Amino acid sequence: MTEDHALMGGKLHVYRRKNSGNWQCSTYLAGKNWRVSTKEDSLARAKDFAEDWYLGLKGKSRAGQLHVGKTFKQAAEQFLHEYEIITAGERSPEYVKGFDMRLRVHLLPFFGDKVLSEITPGLVQEYRIHRASSRKDKTTGESLRPARSTLHHEIVTLRHVLKTANRHG
Image (cartoon, rainbow, N blue to C red; front, side):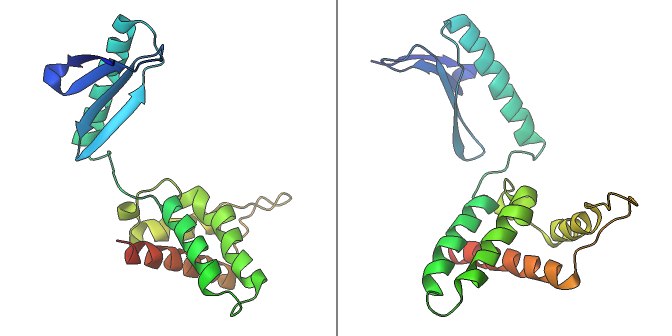
């Protein structure tokens, strides 16, 4: 049987599952259930952890920093899965690998953890600026801009991923 303790007027729960030594905590906030392990075996320390965690989530929610939804990384995985199957025999394997490489090397490090609703034209422009200024020549220290066609291929890849996300709601 699960031990359960309600905190913060019932908005926060600290519980320990059967066969587990550590306490967990959970809450419902911003239309989503949130859960995390306290990594504590002491109820008193677990309650302290849970209260701090809950107040941090609540603060992020009030500040508009608590975003829920599918991430760019999830949409990119879906795109790669679909694109490989849909274009089988119509596109060369090297062409399909290009999408994977652009996502892995450039787009996922920048957009990966962002919720899809956070990806705006302004953020795409920030990406372009980031790409234009992130590499430096080792001898002169000058910025090495990617070729115009390289950046174009990256934006096309980004567009494909966002269209896939749109198709899946």
